[in-house]
Amino acid sequence: MLRRTLAASGLSLLASPALAQNAAAPLRIALATSVSNEATEAAATEARAQGLNVRLQEFSDWQTPNRTVFDGEQDANFFQHQPFLEYSNTRAGWNLVPVAVGFATAFGLYSKRIPALDGIREGARIAYSGDAVNTGRSLLLLQSAGLLQLKPGADHRAGPEDIVGNPRRLRLVPLDGPQIARALDDVDAVATYPTFARLGGIDPSRGLIFENDPRYAFRFVTRPDRTQDERLTRFIAVYHRSDAVKQVLRRLYADLVSFPWEQG
Image: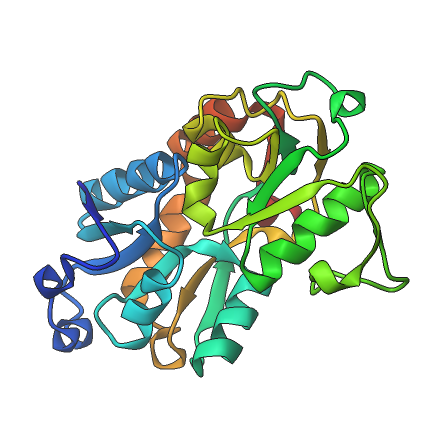
């Protein structure tokens, strides 16, 4: 069963870190709010059928899943890509490491009001995830759409200060990542992942423009001292081999999802 927890509550319910030393203890995996957690639950169900007890804990923000792994309250997490992990480690002084790749999805510009890029009017409000990593990805997407111009050489670390051209005078609205789905009703468009488009009531395949950079595939992440945890290794193997996982993800994302572990 997937347990959902608000960022500021529920942490006292988590198992003691000492249990991680017991191979018979449940494998505790932290997640962030996402429709894709349905696929992780499918893998957990298969793992339990094979004798591996897995407990999933969903949090409503993108910081708590990393903090709880670092503090030993969770054994691993599965919600982030490599650039976000690097940013979080640097910002918080953590040393979390990726141990395996999960699925990848495209990143798109979505709107409930505008059917095509050329419908984005002057002064339109565009929301994006305001963390440093997803800010850069959002700005690069808007540049590829011809809506912004960034400084030469700007990469995934770009910020608003790197904008050198904004011909339509777009008003950019940074938000905390999980708030993006709710923002779809309030702004003209959002730069985000298909999972948040679906949560906001939009068919994920109906983006105005997409990109799919492999560096942004989601990763299983843990502490350096737990990279050899046999329970985590077993669960990742179940996830990778599961037809149910792929079926759920294809149902959610159709052609926008890929499985990097199959590509060597």
